[in-house]
Figure 1 (cartoon, rainbow, N blue to C red):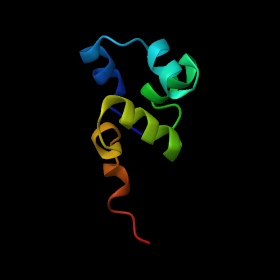
Figure 2 (figure 1 turned 90 degrees about the vertical axis):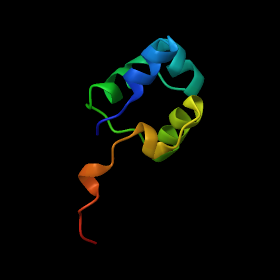
Figure 3 (figure 1 turned 90 degrees about the horizontal axis):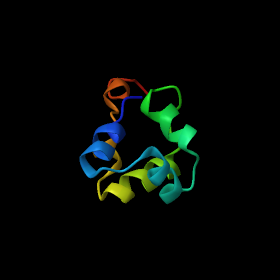
Figure 4 (figure 1 turned 135 degrees about the vertical axis):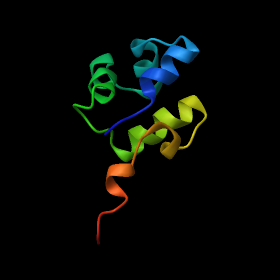
Length: 70
């Protein structure tokens, strides 16, 4: 899943380590999310979005899921 985490971190001059510590995960987890090897759980996505003062939809790109039928 595409995210804006890397952009947001760079804009705010925050390292992966700083973000990881703030949301309670490892730096490797943040790296994996940024390179789309791992999709954040809903609670983690919330923590990351909240850290940046944004909504989940502003940080994570859900467009690939918009046209899925129930």
